[in-house]
Length: 368
Image (cartoon, rainbow, N blue to C red):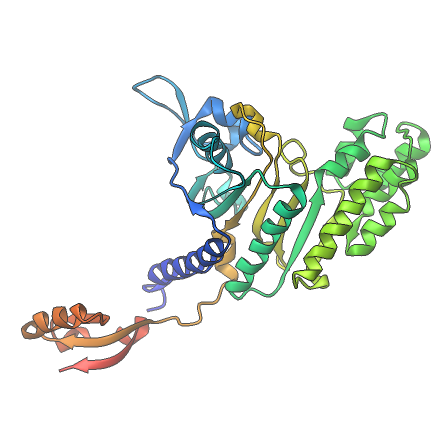
């Protein structure tokens, strides 16, 4: 019977997760927008995160001949709508969305080609408070669905790019960071293949993973670089505010050498990750993206990955609660009368169909 009830229970879980998260979004004043399932290829190729022809599902619109894509990302669609229809709205603008994204991936590697998301985009709010709002919503959203074993992993793309500006061969250094090849990186500095205005800092950066001590350690290596010092102070302020909002210290992790999203994000990149590696939430600051739509306004956002939340989510009540079970064809109208009184009613035509109902339903009363 477990196999037979798997799909209904999955749907109930997804619905409950979505309801809990949407309740949090409403508390922050986010307004839901509905977006098309597909988008123009030309728009997404310039604006979508991690966009490549290998990762998309593409088709041709037979009416226009234009190339279309099943959306791999909601954010460009939201940005385009804000630029075209909401640019005159007072800032900040808070929008939410929900639905599916599609990516052409290798299912043999355990990757999903279709994922359900709920997300938000925040336009026109200053950096510190916009970032704090994203993190607070993410934390409360995960807390609301009862998940406890997770970390909030913070990368700062602005800081990373400032560090890259100090090395003579940015591309080689970046490739070594991507590969997490710290031994080879050290050899390159020792041999002179890589040189820098601050070798101590760039050798320390790949190890910059951990709690608040990571920021302090990097700050000690910065020397007199005012941009880096200022940025590290901003990250320390962000951390202090997270703590004051009630986020436990042991939940916060800094990963300053993470290069994922370096060509997309402009500041904080945040991920909520389980101990098992599920990325429950991802997002960050992308202040340059709106420029592609002819508008210059700060922006940040995040998405709850429902497919990743689902495996670690436990539905508190596995059964559907029913006020009345009504039995018999002669009582069909009676079931309707009870529903009119706002009761939840399950009707079956005869007693022969009662078998195994208790697997899916919790029934309070039986009539007759």
